[in-house]
Image (tube, rainbow, N blue to C red; front, side, top):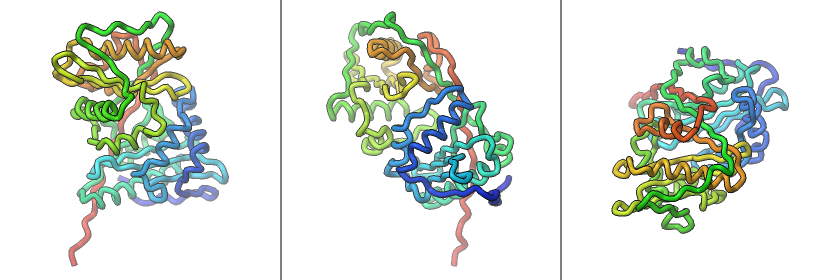
Length: 323
């Protein structure tokens, strides 16, 4: 496994990102989107939310790679686990393989540093990549990275033929218009996703930071109540993407499954966004999800748009000799 630092070729430079770089980063990510999926999918608000997240130290946890004045690669790191798990984003144009490799080395070293501060004896680093990425996968494997999970992004066309559904007997939906409902949405998301791959527990305040709460359209988050069970399901959606409406989370408590809650929430999203004039809706799903979510979405006409793999690298934290 390669661990030495690859020197940058002449003309390439690296510096941390600032909030003022958001537009340039967004443009780069959309260049990568065009190469990987054929369309620009990244919104400026998403990039701004990442860069201003209070748990990200931009000076130490972000990287911009320039070829002269042109931004050609971007990296960002965050630590939701406060343990061994460290997450990172890495985007690079395909004509900069050495610069991209240099960024990987810098980021891997920083991940080990962060895990050490957390008291962990290793760093387990995760990275999401399109299955046909601009990244050199052979070089990535040569550094010890390996794919460990696949997510499918599914989408479906919307039309006026998608009306708001009538709730099944005993089920009611309400939007998150009040603080107690927002806290309940968070609690349900924590409970319904607790057994999912890569889940990291988040406090209510951390979750608000994660979803960039100051810009959230709260009426687009719904809680489902079941007679005799109470609040049992939640769906968080977004209407800030250019190309499609988006279902960010859909979770049903285990004891409430089998009652048609997931189907009703899904059809509610279809009808709501069709009424808003959106012509397409999407979501991401873990292909190994044991709850049957992938089959549910497919039964409702959602089809594969593209796929993303989670890649993992495990690096030991070197202990400091006792004095």
